Amino acid sequence: MKLRNVLEKVDIVSEASDLDMEISGVCYDTRALIAGNIFVAIKGYETDGHKYIDTAAQNGAACIICEDAPKVDVPYVLVKDSRKALSLISIAWFQNPAEKLRMIGVTGTNGKTTVTSLLKCVIEKCTGAKSGLIGTSGIMIGDVEIPAEHTTPESYELQKILAMMVDAGCEYAVMEVSSHALELGRVHGIEFEVGVYTNLSQDHLDFHGTMEAYARAKSALFAISQKSAINIDDSYADVMLEKAAGSVFTYAIDDDSADLVGKDVKLLSDRISFCALMIGELVRFGIPIPGMFSVYNALAVVSAAFLLGLDINRVSEELPLCECVKGRAEVVPTDSDFTVIIDYAHTPDALEKIINAVRGSATGRVITLFGCGGDRDSTKRPLMGEIAGKYSDFVIVTSDNPRTEKPDAIITDILEGMKLTKAPYEVIENRKEAIFWSLENAKPGDVVILAGKGHEDYQVIGKEKFHFDEREIVAEYFGKT
Image (tube, helix red, strand yellow):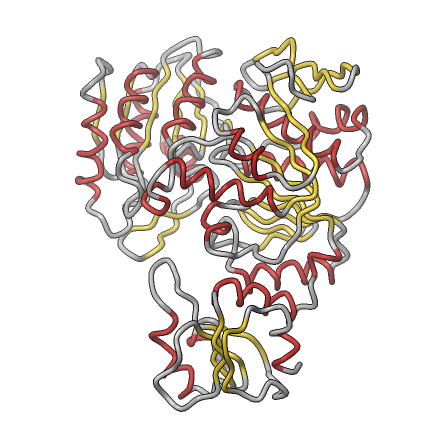
């Protein structure tokens, strides 16, 4: 492909290169660069690709796409925004796969993984069409699973995955769209048929700085969506509504002005059900995941399905048959007289929701085991400590993914919030030992919540990733006793 072809929609400032040169590929990481590739120097979250232009030139880059002129003698094209340029170049390189798919994007702090997974299931059951999924728990191309490093991959990988979906015969692509992805231009140039908003609560303030900036980043999805489904019970809904460029469909439980309203909600220990009132029609829905937050997730799925033109009565039949999402209020099979639940809750709001969801059905104590991630928003740590202590009967404070921080320093931050409550607690830094301790001390009727890891089967200590699957750890404990 010629260089000018991949640059066709890029905002170019100046050029010092032959635009008719043939290029062999696109690269933004010099470690993966092959001679003849163009190298796009992006200003990243942790480093700046402009620092590696010399290395790219030495490795045979055909041309450098950058915001600042190189200091070495190499063909280059100056662009206004190299991140957006990478996305547009990748779209052109892979021949715009998103145009060949019905794109659905889901954003919000909590619920994205559950909504995308259930929506993929509903689409396939109701239409028979093959669908792709991109999100926190991985990438699915039909039934084939591929591990994922980020909720929303970098733009080049994202376009490559979408192209793979097209090649595999997918008709739909359902994806989580993170605030990082929107802020860093990873989905720049993509138009979504449907954008879905779940909710907003404190998270990623280490990146965005304020909740207002976080909300603005999320709202960008609705400026590039033909149709938007928005939860108007959420306090930041107005920010999303203001940015919506296409038609808007609202859903809620408390606000009767919504287009879709959940009524007659029934919360059971292993599932929820509710009646959905929509445009004069009343249909009962249910999903096999407990908690009020599951009602909102189901409403989001139903809203998106409606905007995609699916038959709502068929959706109501198929939705309860969709499997629980791994790591989301997931009940771990045991032969014990107490219950073990694994949940991804790693924000104050999510932790409060899972504890309260469990409390509604527990006959014994609610025991919450959790930690907080290192190198991430530290302001939420005492908040989560206070929430765990306020709503749980007993708390075990441990590690999550400490990354490059000292685990005991993270725990100290958590305990600042715990001390504001009267809940008894135990501190066990080693997460495996903490899980064993929680199971050993659980009593009949208790519910043990292992919060924070969810679908993850690893733990990040320092900069290394170690295998750590809580299902295996629970099974190991019961295998020993």
